[in-house]
Length: 341
Image (tube, rainbow, N blue to C red):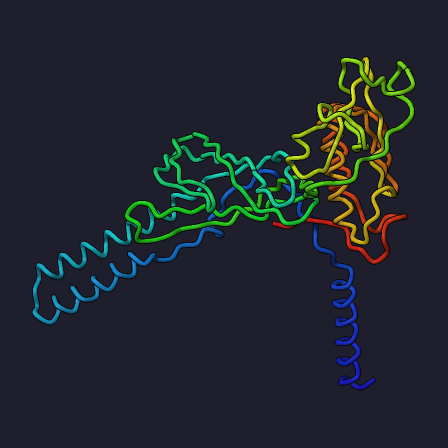
């Protein structure tokens, strides 16, 4: 076999092996951690506006001292240059040996600001007189100390909202340079659907708790919930606070040791838009909780039984926040709600 053919065959074999290695290579998944530490290769520094002005002054003094051969002027210029260099090193070292830990914040409604608790800790045994997290107030950090602060993010859509990044910066000591580093500790806040201003009253069931006393017992002392206004109802039984909130005429009902049971049902709230329907359901959940109803939630693929209390309310709101519009029974073509910072 000619030598040229052998070389071509060997080259094709090596290319085939290289292609196999490249196609079989997969990047390793980076585990998400709630804590991130600064690294010397990811600390950046640039002069500030004050630093640029300081550099122009140095250039002017240097040219003047050289032009007039003024040794005192040169001494002053080099002294100012050395001060700037020492300032640059101190500014850069302020961010070395720090770690930032993020924690999950409390759930919020869409449109409110999500709050992420952060803690910045020193692990190098060095005091940091001037630090700042972009979006929060500046702070000082003692040697081996820890500072707790809060970072906020706007919310626009329902769903889990992840903390995108944390930028830690400093301008210490003279403000001539700005050093910063970008960290990505993992934390999430659950964003509930924004509740509608008003929603239709969910239909009441015929049974009430374990007592099973039948009807609402109108005229008894214990408040059991509202109902729609009917002609002839006494004005004394009207819920004027609900009327002031533009929820229409609502009549207060009273009964003995009973609580109305209702279903907050996906099918009972017709709406062409998925997000609007979830907004109406969120309003019904809040109203049922405020009226101390025993309520349950029905969504396509999700059913939460009747219960009361704050934990049950947050469980229902969380189901609305994580609802996938592509589940069976939901409107076709709708996109699931999600949130990104």
